[in-house]
Length: 338
Picture 1 (cartoon, rainbow, N blue to C red):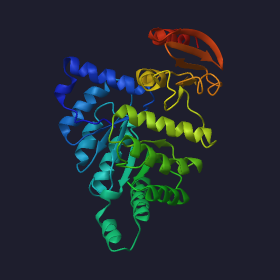
Picture 2: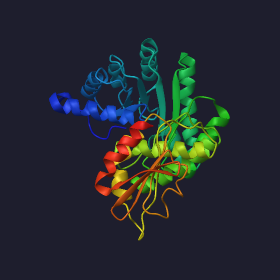
Picture 3: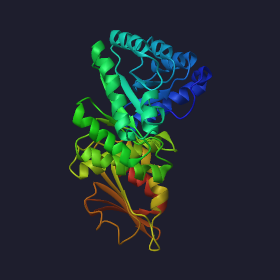
Picture 4: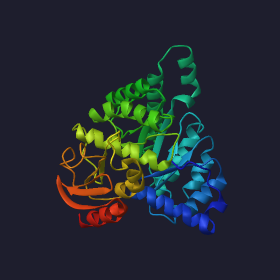
């Protein structure tokens, strides 16, 4: 999700070109859909103008005012997200559905634990239902409106900040409805904590075949959200739960007192470029002779070092031994050969 307000001036001149470049870079590392908060009509019109400049599908996230959703649908927006807890009554939802159907724009029914419909909030506060059950009930109520209208192009998300609630809600929903599910933990936290909490909630669901799209919600950069999501999918694929996604898989040692090569700095310099690769490659960035070509023998391409010398290897075989100052250039040359 885009992390800042979107203002008309943001699309002017170099600022506008910078936004387009960043969106293209997000797409290159694996972002398939980029969501923007749209709090007012002016933002809807700005997002519409941006959508015509980029190839990445853009999603409009709408709360409170259904008229904003209607305005977004005047532009090449790829998807709408509406929240049944605050979008308004049935007639307003149906107005959005009618226009979305005419424009062939899909909708995400986005239910949040913090903004449930009033009746369900009351039941939850009175202890008459659990949070996961309330999330499912809200989603099913909205689906009933969509079904009555005949609108079928939708996906459902039930977001909570708790791991147990996230898992339980999606399991309960899947037992009752086969609609596509967008999964994620909302407000998961900063980079490390949020990535761990998201993995803990999403991997069990993916193991059970639950989840069609996902987002990792972090108090961090959009780039790191995408990378964390990709790594969760890699982990699920390694466990045999999902089909592996293409692109680079980075293996890097944590570094220790034997360090002979600065794995941290090299990984930081190369990480986003490696994640932008389309080929399913295994890349190893190792720190010393212990964790060098031997332990990373399976890697399609690897780099390690000792002293002022750096080794570049492939499948355990050393390709080049070079000075540390030439490491990036040599690594790039070998990477381009793959």
